[in-house]
Length: 305
Image (cartoon, rainbow, N blue to C red; front, side, top):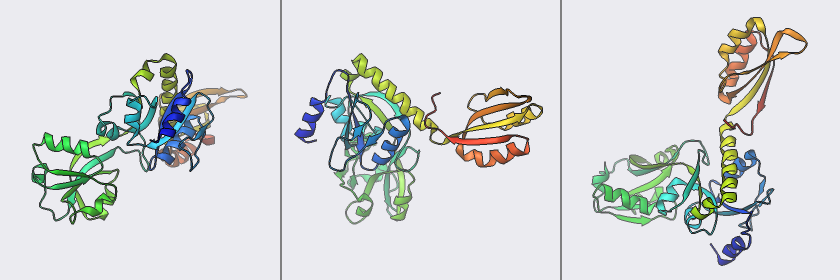
């Protein structure tokens, strides 16, 4: 981080202002969308580290996810969103506020795996003795080798790690959500070093500050609510009382459906539920067949359990 960026963050450090780092790069778009669903409109300028946000109590800075744990630990920034892998790689001493299960493509955890060419004689960690490994996760990889009692050369990879085997290195440790990129490069996974999800982390001093702690907890609650709502929709409908039980048997409510009498007809009730979006395409025709009418599906921004 440049001195000018550090100075800008310090200058914005006020008693009732929270500085928060969002990941720049592959997670940036997904994070901005999550913030919007949680209630914050973040506008990013290509020429600035500092997006605007419609909250005078927030100071947002965009940084590489790999850098965020260190700047949060050192108190340059109050808190930030980064991967658990980055926290471990930096050996950062930070307060975890919340686990946020999302990524650039799926909601699966991000896995760091040991991979080699399909025809490689390397079949386990023990076979790495004296070999060369390329990865962006150098410290985690070294600890993995120490755990297995193996001595190997670990070099930092600046990208395009998959293409370095077998000509430049013997194996790689690479992050993947689905494994498809590794397979496309003719590689096989022989071990998993760790599974990582996105975390909201805080500086310990900032966490001890009552105002900042409450603000961070509020942000975390709304972010978690936005993620909870991501794959869900709301359904409203009218149902005849005579058919209420078979209709209720179809409803995958989070707890119990909301049931309200209709003011102008005692023989009918109004139902409202939250359901997984993937189930609604099958559920709506079943509800219609059981007698439900006036079915309305609507999107959700947040679900606070």
